[in-house]
Image (cartoon, rainbow, N blue to C red; front, top):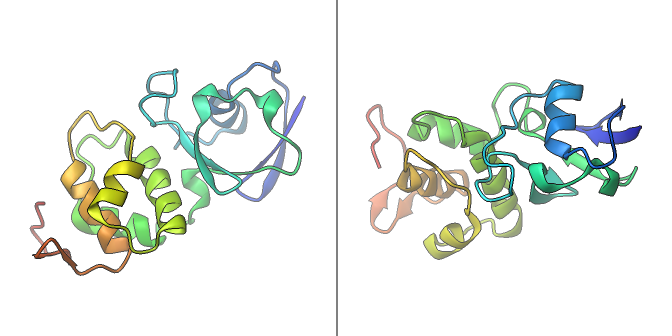
Length: 165
C-alpha cells in the first residue's frame, strides 16, 4: 500500500512497490490528465511535479515516494484552467493534437518557478518534452506570454484571434 499526496489530497493506493507513479495516478487515483507516451522517461507526456520539480512519472516506482512528498498533476494546477501557463497555452492555441500538452505545461510551470523571465535559450534547455506535432514555436511563445514577456525576439507575444507562431 502506497500513500500518495496528489494535488493536496492523500490517497492510499494498493499497488506493487515497483508500479510506476504514472499508473498509480491514472489507474488507481483516476487522474487521467497525465499521459502515457513512451514508458522510458524520454517523451515527457507523463510529466508531473514531485516536491516542485518536474519529473517523468513513468519511471518513478511508487516505492520511492515518501509520505511527505507532494505530487502535482495537471489537474492540480487549477480547477478551471486559470493558471497563467494554461491561459497562455489557450490564448496562443498551442496544442495541435494535444496529447503531450499536459506534460509540456507541467514542464513550463516548473521552468517559470525557477526562472520567471526565461530567455529563448532557457526555454529550449528546460522544455525537453517531445511534441510529435512540432508546436515548439508556439510552446516557446506561450512560455514567454505566461512569463509576462510581451515582445519576444522583436515579435509581439500578445495573442490575437489568429495567432500563429
